[in-house]
Image 1: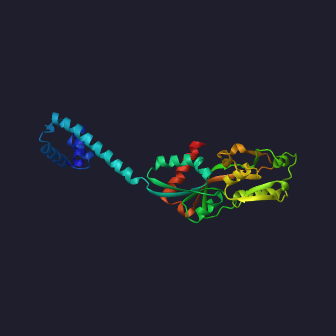
Image 2: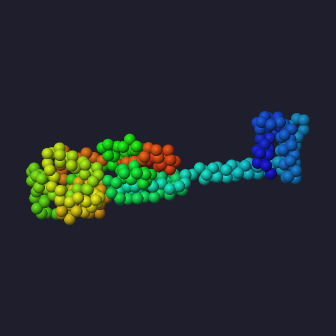
Image 3: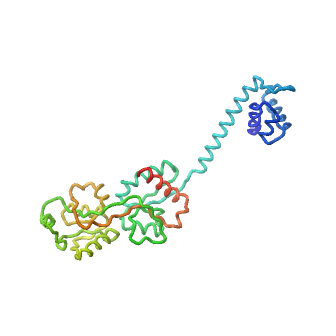
Length: 298
């Protein structure tokens, strides 16, 4: 039984006029008549009564009309399902971010992406924030969650997601360091500083000290903001970290935020992608989801 025949039968059953049915189906009345004859042979019952004045459905014809409608609807639903499955994005998308970003805003963004594209496999790599931009530039990952550098490469596209202030942090415990920090005017040259080895945070801190005309007393240089929080909590010195790191740190209560003036320039954290990768369907889809997610979140 042909689906096209069923479709033409339904048109005739609705119009009860061979000429009108033929016009709607873009065919001839004789073709519609042959379709009816074919279906009646297959069903084994007359489907229409016809005289010079009118065309009527028989009882069998009325029942067959309901069958034909159900059959076509099921077939069309099946076609839509196949089309949806065929058009669903599939493949692997690689991301890089810090541990802090992975359990802060990225978790909500990934949830939104998975809801829209459940068949895309996400490969997440975590590490030091200072490596994020280079991971994207070198093609090691498709997308990096990174702080926007002061000079963004012309090869990169950047979508800001959130502003993250930088904070000076000191140990909560009392001691010689607490006494230095309690002075009305902090003598920063006497304050042991724990800084990141590299990255935008290090650049911002060095710029701040230079603007104050102070040579910092660097006690230690570590890799990763979480390590800075840990060192400060142990009482080794004062550090500078993004507030997002501090908010999500399990030892946040062991440090305190210092009020400094002027304040440090905040980070603009967002998605970083090589321009030529923007046309990739998976990258483009993630970029679009991030735009929609930001509109919803704001």
